[in-house]
Length: 404
Image (cartoon, rainbow, N blue to C red; front, side, top):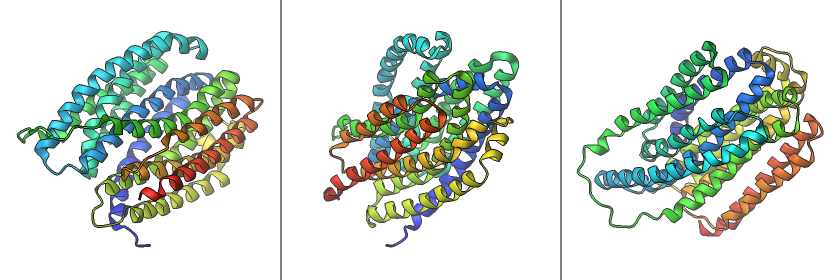
């Protein structure tokens, strides 16, 4: 196998950018974990599941845009594509917001969270649908520095504004307001970042943009995001606030491992979509090696220093969170590998039988609900669910192998 240098270069740029982005996000969670009680942090983690689930839209839309942008060489047509997508997605955002506001009535009762607090998530959903269009253009054209800069600015604004509001006494609502304001400003910045497109004379794309191709991206992305987000909600439903708060702390640290691998998968998606001279499979194998190195290195740290990590992150000695941290780390490592496999198939536009990926999601819900007697069994159930997720991802890979 030939090591693909462009994947390493792209991953390095995005790793630095996403590294700083994730670090700022970690600092935000760090101060929230220390400033809030364990019970309050459980509430914040539950509300932030909305942020994670909103990435179902942002990631699937961005992945869809990347695959189109990567194949479009004329910038005048690219301008037409962007304008059409913004108009289309604005209407879609209004529909999603309306549905969410109705659904939030039921969620507020189940999760025991005030409706107004949950309703603020509607604005997060709106920008999760619009912002990935402009970011998808930057990623598709391999403008990795610009993409990283946009995400870093979002994280920095969220940290400063969200933490500021929280310290002023707005609590969880302050954190959400920080996310909303950061998303708004980042979207405006992204418009200026793709200004090179706006300078061209718009030329209508002759071929019809097939939104049916958006469905596989949406389904696969939805499965990944919902899979790694639902555990916190289910824990909040079945455990007392103190216990669900302990689980939320371990889960957030596990998610950090997953977030660290995202630059690799995004670089692979961009380069594989644009790959002309090189085989996409070489791009995938190189990305997989890099991802495995990251996961193994992080898991060693999780295994050796679980107590230090929990104590450092929360400022509290929470033994129950310490005991499950390694389980969470292994689970999110398996999810990261599964995500890379699914994105690879999406990047080369070779997708069939993608509906089978819903099976692990159903399995996860059943296992977590059934094995919710204590945190250990709950975490082991999540680990088994993640193993099954990887198994189905490999089956999905083999099903689509003949189309390469």
